[in-house]
Every structure is written in C-alpha cells, then in structure tokens.
Length: 199
Image (tube, rainbow, N blue to C red; front, side, top):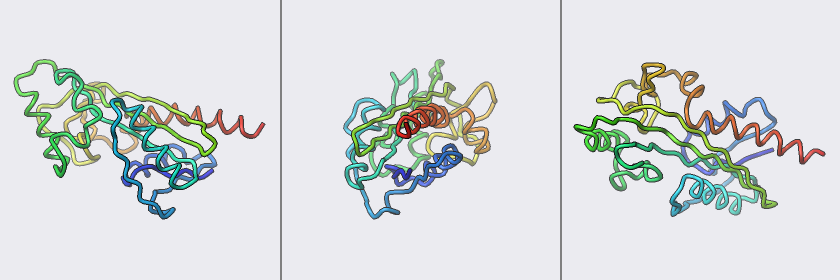
C-alpha cells in the first residue's frame, strides 16, 4: 500500500520509512505524486490538525495519506507553544529563534516540565481514518545542547537519558520520542486494518 505523507519535511519521511519499513507499505512525499497541498492548520488540537492535513492530501491525490501534527507543550507556559510550535513567535523565524523564545519565556521559572506530543492520522479514500497519539515527557534545558535533530530538540532534555533530543542518535531518539511512540501505536492499528481488508 502506498501512502502520501502530508508534509514537505524530509525528516518526517525518514522516520516514517524507518518505523514502517518492515511492513508492505511505501511512503512518499507529496512532490513525488505531483501535488503541493498547503493546509491551513485551523484546528485547536493536534488531532484536529493531523486530520485536516491527512484528509486534504488524500482528497488531492486519491491515495491514502498520512499526516503527523506535533509540538512542544511547556507546563509553565500553559501548554504553549502547543499546536503553534512550528509558528511560535510568528512566521519566518528559524528553529533557533523559536527555541530561544521559549528559553526567554522560562527565565526565572522553577517548573521546567514539558512534553512533546505527536498525533499521526491516516485517511483512506473509502472514508476510513486511523489515529494514534504519542507523548514524551521531559524538561526544558537552560541552554541548547547537541547538534542533531531539528526544531526544539536542542532544548528538550530527557532526564532518564541525561541528554537533549539533539544529543541523541536517531536510534535513541526514535526509541522514546513522541513521534516514535505514535508511529509504533499507528503501526499496530495499521496492521489490524490491513488484516481486516484481507479477510
């Protein structure tokens, strides 16, 4: 089965291919099937935005589409940046500028608890929808550390491993990350769904 990834982010494609690689599933970017869908993320939850993206790409391509909506939720910021993580501080900012805004907002805060959330949704042309949510708890570091990853990874610290996401190898991160956990749940749901189609 071929899925179109409702994203232009090659990092997400690599993660999806790695986790779903042992199934009879191919995941391609929108550009590989000749579409370029811009979806306005008007949802107030990760679930709503993930569904909006997957449905729009499924309708544009006629193929099953898979979308991920994810973000950083910081306790002391009342869950912000949340669904606005990719747009935090306004359009046109770099990843570094965004995470520095978070660090600035937390200046003097004792509670540095946070979590990354990911919701993966697949929409099928027949109307079926699969959804899975994953979370990874952690804290916000006092300064960026590490060179790997993207987004808020340099400031998201996982106490159990004593590393930020940006200090982890891809394997370490996938084993515990919000997206890794959501995709593992999604994989189980998809296996069940595909078995049902075969019967």
